[in-house]
Length: 434
Image 1: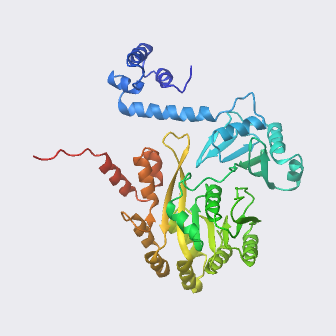
Image 2: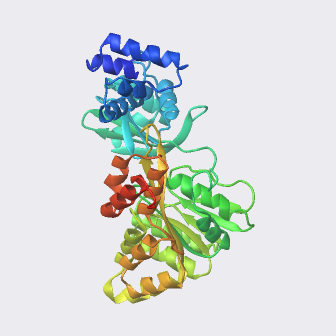
Image 3: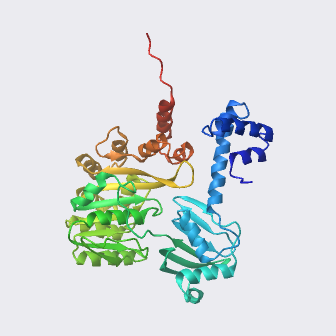
């Protein structure tokens, strides 16, 4: 019997006996199977609403696990990759002595029930990264390189040694850039990028969603003719092939290499620069100076919110240089977009919550003045002209039924504000007085 069906779960837990379940199924059949079985169980007094909700959550969790599993009879490279891609994986870890795990958005799950043995992992590494990787790994602690298999995907592979043996981490890259609308990039950011000047900061946690966001906005910028440079790491995200001339330059693994790579790009005098990481002081300073030169600079930095991103940037500078940095940033900053991936309501996929800051004179004054908490106040205002907060975006997703209260409550900054808004929305309308 399928252990993900509600009836199976009810019988397994002894919550309903077979005769009671058959009676409810018969009632459901009389209605043409249009009524949910849970509604009938409550009507017949066999369940209460809170118990039903807990059982449905268990059903969703079991469905997710079953969907992610790979048959134990086939643990080859092709089967693992096909299952990972079928589950929408963005990251995958294959390691000796451990089950295979995948990440979908922020959520990790097991792809196999049992741990993989050494030969299975070695074959996987050879097929994805080449026959010589294990020999190279014997002399080095890790090997990083792009991977690509026809019909099975592509991305970045990192093979490394750990206590149990060899492991490999794969990321999955899309073959074509999505449109900004398809991945939820607000029109305000698209308009700023099309403006062709200034600094646009893209923000997220742990780089989740970085490649798709940078690729989408590179497509937007490259509609106009010009010379554009994408300064990227080893992750192969797609670049435009029509419109502007877009070339790819390697960013580098250390702060010194990133700074030198970006300086080299600026010396080539492109019309626009897209940079995959400005998360250290020297690299960000080069990006800031490039934007001051009248170019468009679209750059990524890891942070959880607009305020934290700007705080991190200004923390790069010593006290004696802070006033100059604030003035420069206020002059060239055009927009800050934060994107966070949340589990959807079924926990079988993800949705994106965002926070947006469009820079106007009021924001510039805040950046020059130094109290960045005022930006949070501007974003939280109802109908704000400069954007919206992450809390507001998550509330909208919750009201639309796209995410669960539990997931939103764990992430929201103003928990009292969220509870007040959801209480008001859920409250019944009082009858009008005569």
